[in-house]
Image 1 (cartoon, rainbow, N blue to C red):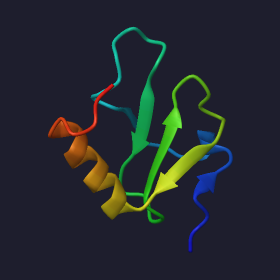
Image 2: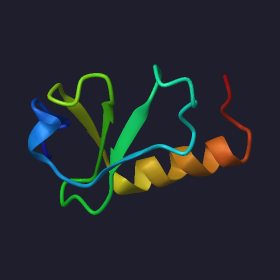
Image 3: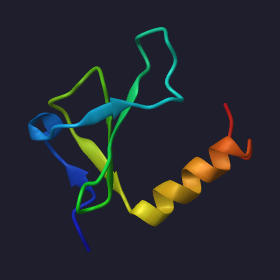
Image 4: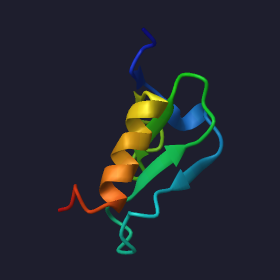
Length: 73
């Protein structure tokens, strides 16, 4: 199994802000597409901090559930 954490995510390029992050500027989730290990996700306030890496299939299921309204705040 691949390590589920990238301890310093600052060295990775291509981060994008999640379309589900608010526009307030404080609670932003960033996602990195096309990473070999899966889908890294990090907090935009700490770009040199860790990123959690989710399996691509699990991330896809999560996004599908969010869009369907199954998961909500």
